[in-house]
Structures are given as C-alpha cells and as structure tokens.
Length: 452
Image (tube, rainbow, N blue to C red; front, side, top):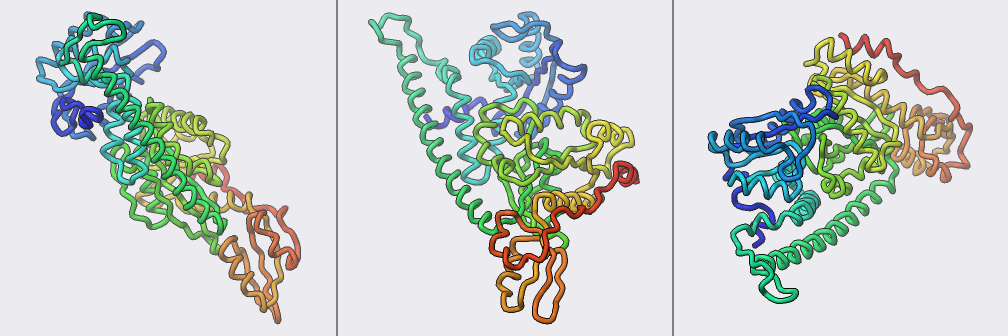
C-alpha cells in the first residue's frame, strides 16, 4: 500500500527508461521561453537517469479542459510516444488530475508533469531528516487528488449499492484518502518538531551575536561553490539542478577578526510547485533571519533575467524581499562580453566573480564588511587591563578594527551590535558611528574588474 502512495510502479525512476517531453508555448510567454523551459525540464528528467527519446513543442492558443491541448495534437503526441516505445510522457505544464487521467487512458502510457518531476528530483536529493520529511509532505499533498490513477484496475459499480454506498473502488479510494490524510498530519507534526530543533540551534548561535548572511539564487548558479570558495567548506557542488537541498552554515573569518556565518540554501527554479515552497519554508527560513542575502546568478545562463526574477519572486513569497541583497554574477571566467554587458544592464551594482578561480571574491568580501559595518554601532572603548574578560568578549561578538596597548589600559575601535553595547557602557570613550564607512568600489571600477 505504501509503495503506490509514493510512486506507482510505472513511475519508478529506476524502471522508467524512455521519456517523451511536451512543452507548451502560449501567447503570454516571451518568444523562446517555452524552448528554454523545455531544455530545463530535460535536464530535470535526465537527473532522474531517464533517457529523452523525443520532444514536442506545442503552440497553444487556448487550453482544452480535457487534455490541455487539442485532440489532433494529442493524437500526434501519443502516436510519436508509442512509436518510440516511451515509458512516460512528461509535460512542462501543470496538468490537472482529470487531464492526467485522460492522457493515461488515451495513451496507455504513464503521464506526469513538471511538478511531479521536481518532486521526484527533490526526493532523490533529500539527505537529512528535515529534507526527507519536507519532500514526503509535498508529495503526499500532490498525490491526494490523484489517487484514482492507482486504482484504475478496480471495478466501478455505479450506484447499485444502496443509499450512501459506493462500489469496491470507491470504498478503497476513501480508505486511501484517509491513509494519505493521516500521513500528512503525521508529517506536519514531525516537521514542527524539526523546526523547533532548528530554532533551538539558531537561538544557541544567536547567544553570541555573529552577523549572518544567506546565499540564495536559482538552482545550479554556483551557490555551494561560492560557500566552499569563501569558507573552505566541502559542500557538494555539482553541475546539475538541485545538487544539494539541505542548508549548510559555515563561518567566514573576515579582516579585523570579524566573523560572519554564511548559509547555503536550496536553489530556486521557475514553476516551483507551491507545495514545495510551503514545505521548504523551514529550510529557506535561514534567509528570513539573515542580516543580509547574497543573490547568486549564473552570468552565462541564457535567460539570466528570468532567473533573477524567479528568485526575487520566491523571496517575496517567503517574506524575505525586504532584506539587503548583494547581487553576485558567478562564472565570469566562462562568460562572453555580451553576457557581462547584459548582466550590467540587469543589475548595475552587481559584483562579478568566479567561485572557480576566486576572481572578484575580495570585492564581495569588502561588500560584506560594509553591510556588517552599516548595521553595527562603531565605538571607541578604553578598557583597563583588569577587564580582559570584556576584551575577549569584544573579539567574540564584534569587529575589532584596531587595538592599542597603553600603560594601564587598552584602547579599541570596535563595531558591535547595538543590543550588545550595555556591558561596555562605562568604558565608552566616544561614539564614532557617524564616521564615514570605507568607500564602496565605483560602478566603473567594478566594470573594469569584470572585464579583465
């Protein structure tokens, strides 16, 4: 019973070997957008180790309730898929449960949509208990209105069983709906427990208030590679969609002993199933509590503007769109001059880097320091030698800009969170918060650096 609730046998990615892809170009879409989305779908399907043996891009004027596309095109796709001995037809559009059932009845082939592919990719990538629960929850909520697909072999008795009595198939379906609903309830309870544990871990980190930033961006833009390049971490970084799902936090030591906690988050994608956005809020909430965000874009991506818009849209849905954002264009070592120019037009203040070669990382680190300085108060403190406990605490919680030993005391210029000033109030020599911060690199200098 549990097997079909997750995957029907014909959809098991270990058994399905040949897929036929169907993309849909509507009048509301930009020219070429459907083709790019279909290429993205192909990469998603190939990540499930399924071969692509055919594809069809349909120009759709108006959707058809029964099968989404017209009857003539439906017959053409089914004939092509059968001639190629396909195991599955994959739509890049969302299919309603009824449309999915109609396609499978007409073709005799398993038919799935982009949402189901993404759910399977996420299930394949999930490692931690939290990610596994989140994916399972999203899959259960997706499968609930589609349970009838698993019981097409059962008889359908039509109303002959008396008032309120259904046939054998209907009875089984009701039982399965209860099973799925019960499992959804259990998964939600487990997720609450996991979120509590994550909250406790975050609270422990915040006892020593180190500034935090979250790396966000479109999937496969190089977020994990950037985390590794900045912190020396060894997070999995592969050239494929959703290589990592679980958030990873590492400490970055900046100049002046300034510490910064950097978190790599799950990547975004166009047409991300809403259920996954909801399910992954526990993972993505690192972006909500971060002091600022580093938005990574692949400067070589054909539609980098759409990737930029998708990430900002998901951040808005999460309620994190009001955060200060450093926009970073990655992979400049592989970019053309035209791609660099397009990125400049998209975000004039963007920072151009290569996580692979290290180019531009110093500029990014400088910008991180500026954002931290903007949010921390700047003080001159004079602390007696007898209070080295306070000096040690300053090094732990703040950014020590300078430290000068005097006869019986230590003079320090520091930046610390406003909430942490109280213990040092008696030792403040001056408040220099209004002092000008280090000048930010000009747009021209950044363009010059990117062009080198």
